[in-house]
Image 1 (tube, rainbow, N blue to C red):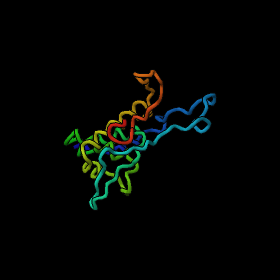
Image 2 (cartoon, rainbow, N blue to C red; image 1 turned 90 degrees about the vertical axis):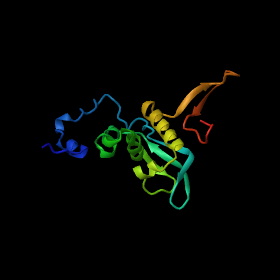
Image 3 (spheres, helix red, strand yellow; image 1 turned 60 degrees about the vertical axis):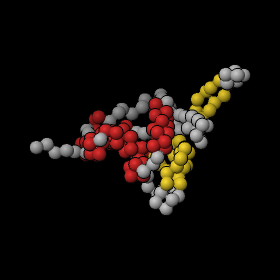
Length: 157
């Protein structure tokens, strides 16, 4: 009978030689350059309503790591229902949601579908493109400007 091991145990077993090589001295280190923007604030279209009836609309999401994307694959809830993957994934990358002390899968489960769709879209944009700003051109005056795709309220993004 095989014993299942978790990602933590797999990472501990990985040989040190598998670590990526150090950057060449000729390349500037991240500390010398500008640090990447890794957290993005958002405003939910409807908002999460907690047990006391308080609505939490403002929060932040961080960029996902490879570990964030791998962990749901070994989660039993995801294995039983693949649609649960986004719930687990979002619970890992949402760093702040109003005054909620701990954002976990149960919190994401209780969000309105509109807010979950908004968060999934935000996740996709920041993790595939690295930002939420886009250059656009006005179709009427041909003026160029930037918009924040994370938006604020419904209809503003």
